[in-house]
Length: 221
View 1 (cartoon, rainbow, N blue to C red):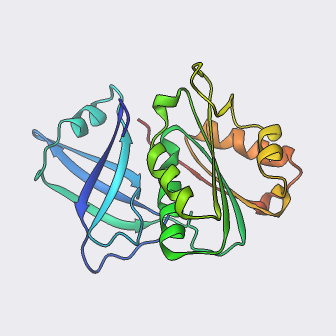
View 2: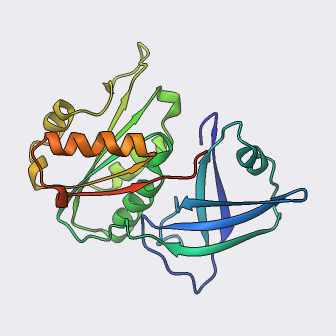
């Protein structure tokens, strides 16, 4: 997906039903060791042939082990889990994502586009550089297909060629890009520090706590 992010696909059992935004638990092997991790689905329930997760690689042992797996290697998957989902329950939602925390949001946006949901979706996605934007082409294609989907990419280290927003996601950016932000339910997920920052951001917009749904990505890396 990027220089340090890859997706892993598995055949989807016919009986597996899941919602966009949910996650699964996977155990995989490398040599004599087993590794267990939780990953959000980066595939959509509308994609019937496979399920997918997407991982940013680090120097951690489990990450290096995953990087070394090959097609056909053994894995056990337990799914689905989680209540951080969206299937059209709200007329307007805003998604606040950063880095690899984007994975449940690509699932939600694919599902909404494939099913023709009428909900208005605005995605704010922040990364360090343009090259770190995961699913950039996929999101742009979804926005072309779905008139109810708006994508706002922002980067902290912009090149002269970058035409999008710069800096971290903040209140001014949200007010500029989403004038009716008070009518939106906000979703955010990722490592705890990022989620805490987004919680504070939504609170600074004067919105009640029940207008924010969040999920912590724990167990990093």
